[in-house]
Length: 180
Image (cartoon, rainbow, N blue to C red; front, side, top):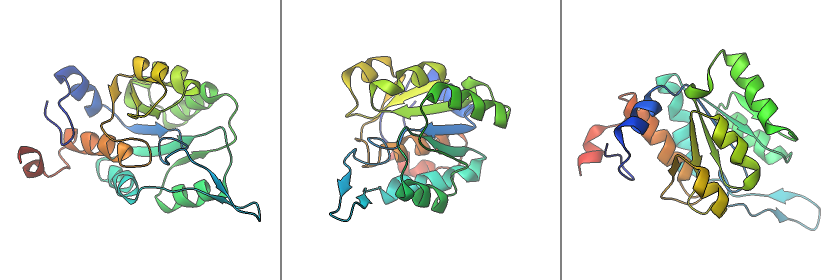
């Protein structure tokens, strides 16, 4: 199937149509992975506005979004809250346990969930999710485990790629853009 970014096989496209939840790591996926610290100890991260627009648009087809991250950051809380993320789970030591708890809370199966990651700590979640996605600049071991690798790198539109595929599967993406 042709998407805006790349061709994906029909089976994977069909699986995207069943998605009701997108979960993601933060550093290296929603940001470029860099963490800037000021002299005062404040943390600065950069987030893609395109990713944000994609996250907000998921609600139009009934798909929720959330993050599971090992770090805790007021910036992440603020950004995800502003985008309407349903799950903002920070400081998580056992991401698999948290993943399972979120699925249970939403009464979903793993097949209805996408997980987007970039580093080796994300590999178990890629395996658990119905669709495991790695950003293009992910660790080589993560790239090998992924069902799909994004065209864009983390923090620069990779999440938007995935939201657009989901929107397309749900008939919520302008099909004229794809044929050009």
